[in-house]
Length: 93
Image (cartoon, rainbow, N blue to C red):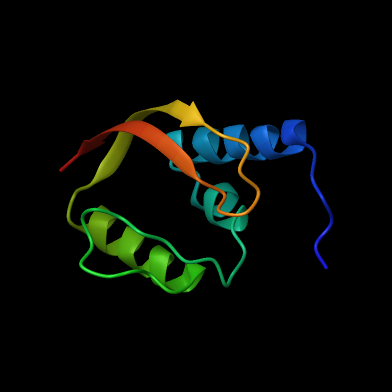
């Protein structure tokens, strides 16, 4: 059974993820996710079924010239079940 996190711990973790994403700090960003996490993005045709799948997709995007030039958390919610996070990003293609 996973330990229960306080809402403050959940929010702190979400803030660290947003900061790492904004800085394109891949080690810190991807290290924040469980290897078995799944990901949904509007720009991908299907669900990414693991952190490794997401890292592979990230590398593809970066190789195509994509990068984050800014990121601000639009809405962070303390939802321990889904880990939902909404971000406003300014990617460059």
